[in-house]
Length: 205
Image (tube, rainbow, N blue to C red; front, top):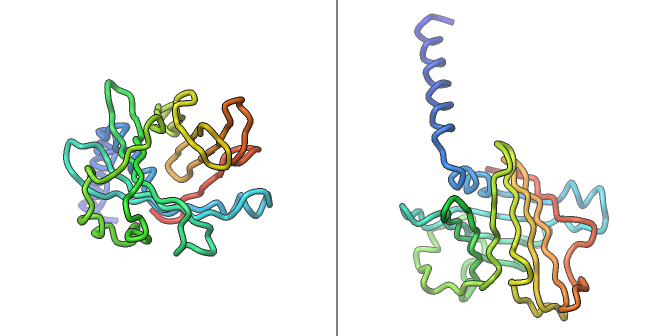
């Protein structure tokens, strides 16, 4: 390897390292959350978990407005029929990161939107319906992990007899653990995984 090439590679390495250090926590979190995930490995090891496809992609790249992510979940064998479509808005307030959750009007029009984010040009944030009390508060534990959860019993849910829902997440560069549960007003769980959260491995960035 000649001297000039060695110097060029060293420059690229140093520049990349400096840029990585300059990224904010919320920017890193948005990058880690973006991509294609599935729980195939977990489903093969434990039959009580399904193989779920999780797609998350950036939309509305507007400066100074946090990070918007379109989220689509489906059973892996029927990816064209998602059972959950949401938009997450990552914002940072006073050093605290929140993922604010929104429902989408006419969500069928946006199935597969993770493959073509331009479809969201026809949708505006003002058209979304916020899921009050369902925001996830996220903290960076160390350089490798973010941990978050909903707050108390603030997220109202009437699914399968529940009165509120909770969400817990653990996010790393290449994986995400998501544990959604529904409870009655007596604290009895009526939906969601029992043993622990779904473990999603990133398959495409």
